[in-house]
Image (cartoon, rainbow, N blue to C red; front, side, top):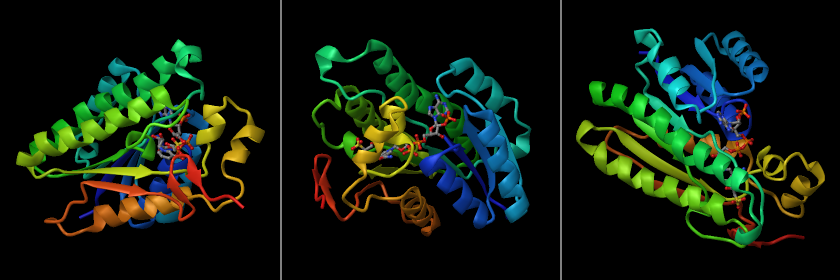
Length: 252
Ligand code: NDP
Ligand code: 8X3
């Protein structure tokens, strides 16, 4: 039986790495992201390379009505989602609380918490009906500790950590697995987005040590998904070997 995964934030980084890995394992995919061209290019490439079926939905997960509409409008065969990877997320700014931008705060809260919830609401109902499924929530070490100037981003990831536990409890009667993955520094577009396109500043975050790669996280997610039906990783923190805490990184 061919399986189906829905991945949010599939146009870059961890989401894109998951899309490629799951495609290589024969999964059909629903891919979500805002950058339409990238999304469709990735979908085309995966269909060509792996002979799978891909539904690309250009969508902003912050838009509650569009999330509900676009997902509910899918033909029934696209509603049998086996794996939901709630990956779309971002950080904006790195400022002390009194200097933070309220618009950045809104963006992070709306994407990392509310967007994740909107997608989960629809897809978890499909899973409940089928009494099966696996939800992977991308948290962060920022959801396990709070670091200087990380304030609102850390708060959103603490919320994801809490929601991960809540989903695990509420969906338990339906046999649905829920797994939180909490990476430390992963070299993706993340820092470029956090620093609003400042490539030089972003590059420095990953200099002097070997950071995690998006593929490392995709491999771990694949491992969690491949476990036997009676085994569920609830929570997993992963960092580069050179990283002990958010601010303790051994740099050369
Ligand atoms: P990237 O910036 O490389 O990718 C983020 C993805 O999220 C992009 O595909 C982006 O696509 C998508 N996205 C952002 N906002 C929205 C939105 N409103 N609607 C739909 N899609 C959206 O970052 P990463 O791959 O590193 O991050 C993925 C997840 O992992 C995030 O939740 C992040 O917080 C978390 N994480 C990252 C770490 C890191 O160090 N990189 C460490 C720990 C956790 P588009 O712009 O096309 O919409
Ligand atoms: C991304 C890792 O340390 O920038 O969640 O918060 S960090």
